[in-house]
Image 1 (cartoon, rainbow, N blue to C red):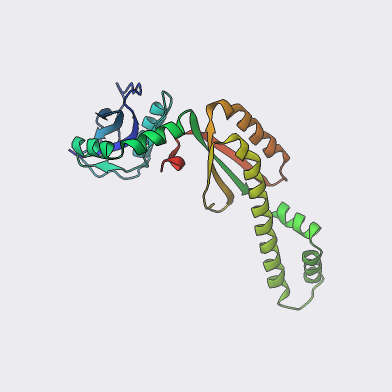
Image 2 (cartoon, one colour):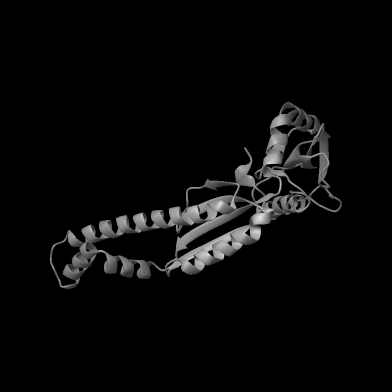
Length: 239
C-alpha cells in the first residue's frame, strides 16, 4: 500500500505516535519504519492526497508533534512512497547524508520573517519629502502643468525610490538578525511583502532573536509591518 511520508528522524527519536492520525479522508494511524540508525514517520494512504486544508493541517500537526520531542528532517507536503521496502531502501542508501542533516539541524527551529509596506500613502509622503526631483514633478502636476509625460515620469521615479528603499531596508533587517541564526535562506517575496527570510535559530538563541525582532519592529519607519512566525519545522534547511 502507498505511504505518505512526513519526516525522517533518528531511530531513537521518542515518536509517541499513539493516537496520531495522518492525512486523507479516512486517515490511517501514523507509524514509523526503521532502517539502521534512522526512522521514517509515515501513514498508509489509499487515495490521492491534495493540498486541502484538512490534510495540510494533519501534515503540519505531525511535524510539530515530532519536532517538540527531538530533531527531525521534515518533508514537504505530498511526499509519497510505494511501500515500506521503498522507504527502508531510501533510508539505507542515504544514511550518512540524513545523519549529517539531523546533526546540523539539532537544537534549532525555523523562523520566518516577513516585511511589507502597509501604508503606501505614508511612503509616498516620505519620498516627496526626501526627493527634490519627485517633489518638483509633483508640484508641477498639482499646478496644472499640461505636460502629459509628468505623471509617467513621477510614477517611474517613485517606483525606483520604493524599490531602492525596500531593498535597503530588507538588507538591513537581514543583517541585524543574522547573528541569532545558524543559517539563513532568503526567498523571493510576493506582494505586498518585500522581505521573506527564513532563519535557523538555535533554541538557546530564541529569546534574544525575538527580542531583537521586536526592537527592529519598533525602530523601523511607520507604515512598515515586520512580523515573525515560528518556531516551525526547518523545511527551508533540509537539503
